[in-house]
Length: 86
Image (tube, rainbow, N blue to C red):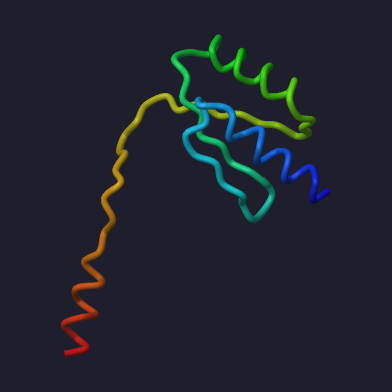
């Protein structure tokens, strides 16, 4: 099982379409954020992926609209803690 995990990690790194890759807790083991222009490109990505590594119980969901996307962190709590510590 450990060798499969290591191989899976190596395989995913080879796919530039994968922009985020997480090992999860709960019912889903891994979460990949894949950026492709359309469903046909996703289908091509998926076929290349399963040709490289054996997967089971794969599910996909597609974003219909991006409502908010930011990399800014809400760090106001850190400033408040610093003030309280003084």
